[in-house]
Length: 324
Ligand SMILES: Nc1ncnc2c1ncn2[C@@H]1O[C@H](COP(=O)(O)OP(=O)(O)OP(=O)(O)O)[C@@H](O)[C@H]1O
Ligand SMILES: [Mg+2]
Image (cartoon, rainbow, N blue to C red; front, side):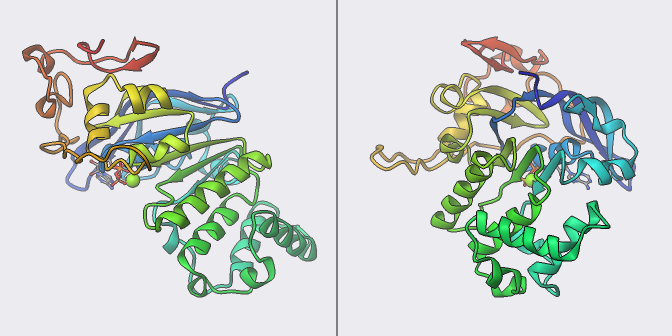
């Protein structure tokens, strides 16, 4: 099957007001197949949200395209005029559930009006009555009390429901790809589960075709993603199946990231999380050799000398020349 999304050696940088260049995404490549859920995990500042901006074609200063391509169903969205991105990419090819979605709803307007606007923005001539019918149908289908929710203001909804409403509104136009950027980190565990279940329903119902699920909690991806990419300092350092990455990570950073998280699995022996010493490198400075070497528990003297490339190890791809 042809990939629905192809990211090819994508590089994105910020230009700060002081003229500094921050290479926040530095050579990211992956593909997403129809029906697939890809998880992306990594520490704060590793470039996850910047990558999302690239995937959505949302390149505006201070963020700039350095090089590379993002193709959705074969079309390179980074070379489209911004008006075309807004008209035909956003919400249709790809939609995002934003980080901190709880606060992304305009508090002064009813859910009904916010949702109606999404449809009108893509179809100015849409019939008002038909839109209302469509909203009721969709909200009901995703398990919301349509009438009550549509007539509410965002502040009147509990956090978990607000999150589901945000997801409902973001996917009104049946986007091929949905990106969830830490959609559940601000929620309690049961609301978090409900949100993940809703995202699965969207796939099952054929409302969306594929998903990218982004979090810094790598273990959370175990029950969510089929494949996982681990990011560090603007690059993918390991990408493989969920089994491979979570239970048998071969890149030292993957293992450190797993080890730094509480394992919340029932029935599993509890162990103490081990924090990763030190901090990620400053992406505003050039970095030579392996970007993780200064923090890596198994680093060798040659690690800071050799730039690392992704290579196949035990059926997945790893950026570490010592990995076996
Ligand atoms: N407007 C900006 N100008 C300059 N640098 C920026 C800007 N926005 C982000 N950065 C830098 O780009 C890098 C990647 O940031 P990004 O927000 O993509 O990380 P993230 O992985 O999403 O982090 P988090 O887990 O905290 O959401 C960081 O080093 C950050 O400091
Ligand atoms: Mg982010």
